[in-house]
Length: 282
Image (cartoon, rainbow, N blue to C red):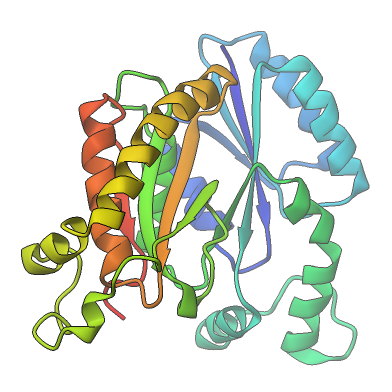
C-alpha cells in the first residue's frame, strides 16, 4: 500500500524540520513541488510502489488548486494524510527576529506581524481540512522531530496504529494535535496537599494520591474498555496514529498520573503508546 503525506502550514512553523525528519524515517521527500504536479508525481510514484511506497510532499503554499489536487490524490492513492504545522504569532515573530530572515509571505507594508497574520488568514481552510494539526509554538526543532518520529515511525504495537497518550494543563490552553480530550479536574487535586505540591504525577506519592481515589479508579475502569473498543475501530478505518490527551488545571499532577496509568493499560493491550507530558515542567 502506498502512503502519501502532504505537509503544509505557516512559514516558520517547522516545515523544514518536518521534511528532514521524514527523510530520516525513510520516506521519499519532495520539497516545494509545484501544485499542478502533486497528483501527477503521486501517480508516477504509485507505478513504482516498491521504491516510493512512502512519499512526503512539502508544500509552501495552500490554495484552492492544492485543495483540488489533494482531492484527486485521495481518489488515486490508498492512504493520504495532510499535516498542518501551526504556531502562535508571538512564537513566529520571535523565530524570524532571532534568525533575521525575511518572511516569505505577502508583504503589504505592515511589516513582519502583518505578513504573518495575512498568511494565517490565507491558511484558514488548510488548517480546517488537515488530518493532523501540530502546534509548534512551544516546540523546539528537536521536540518537533520527536513528535513526528512518534507519530510516523513504524508502529511497535500489535495493531498497526501509533497511539500517543499525553497530559496538559487547561490554564495553558487545549492541545490542538490530539483526537480525544478527557478532563481530569473532577479528581481531588494533590496541589492542595503541601507535601505534594512541588512533586508531579510522575512521582509515586502523587500517583498514589490520584489513583487511590475511588472516582479516579471508576473513571479508568470505565474508560479502559471503551478505548479497547474504539482504538481497533480507528485502526480499521485506516488511521495510522491517534492522540489521547488528559487535562487538569496545571498539567502537573492529576492528568500526568492518569495518562501514565492509561498508557500502562494500553501497553498491556499491545498498543505500545508513546507518552508526552506537555506542561509537567511549567
